[in-house]
Image 1 (cartoon, rainbow, N blue to C red):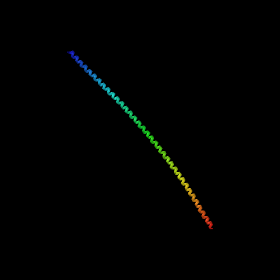
Image 2: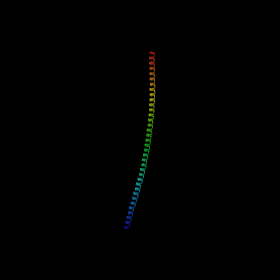
Image 3: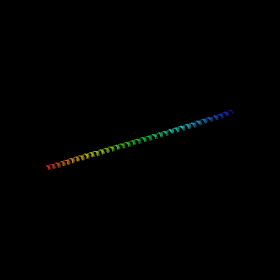
Image 4: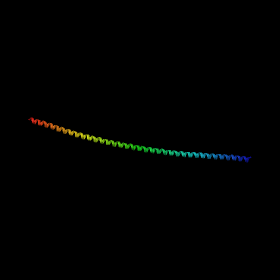
Length: 129
């Protein structure tokens, strides 16, 4: 009886040990699964971070291109304004020259007209004398 009882107790102990080993193996597998999930999550976060960095770089490049475009437009506008100013200045100079020519012409005509009047008066006075 004692031998049989000891054998049964031994078998029970062995069964408990097997259960403990199995439980530890399952916990080990669960731990390994959790570690694998953490690694995968870390990789996904790394990929997401790289994607965000890529998007930031693209946005920065677009902003730089937009700035260059705006700067190019400003330079063009400034050149046009300078050309317009030169054109207006040229027109102003031409008008001033025309006005001076017109004034010279009028002064010349007035002088001629005065000379003519003086000549007529002089000859009239000479004729009268």
